[in-house]
Picture 1 (cartoon, rainbow, N blue to C red):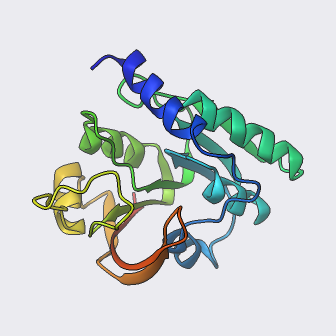
Picture 2: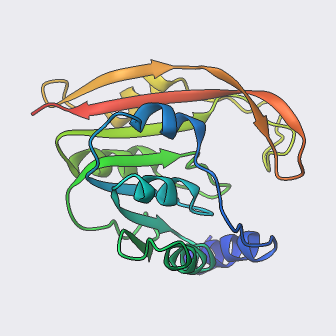
Length: 208
């Protein structure tokens, strides 16, 4: 499938639902980042923008990217309306072809899953190299299938955090795995239903 087709697909996903007036952050972001000194953050696959806005409110300067121009434009408008336009830069990137420039203290990739081919290991490896010394890469993946997920394949297998880390294949002399676990939580879907889900959480820190 071409890049144009992927953009069209994701633009359609976001255009088909109402824009969120005040999107909320992902739980794993809040528990990981609370207590860290603010710096420069990169949000990969920003979606509705809850993570980017939450970080900006806490003093972070955020570059938020998504393949969907609809998502990016909505987030840029939201940031301005919330008085955070000077702290949030929203950019459209197809991570197959382009990656935001600069160095970062925090890079988040929450549920960076897609029905299309994506070399996630390469994207996450590039992200790790974009970390400053002491910076962290937070990767949160699905560890179970929620009732509202677009992927209801009963045979789907979710790689463990350690398997994701092995796939990124980073030099342990430069990057250290700080967390790799699979906590459970009660999640609420877009239709208001709740269900217990499993998150696969991987946190990597650049040490050299």
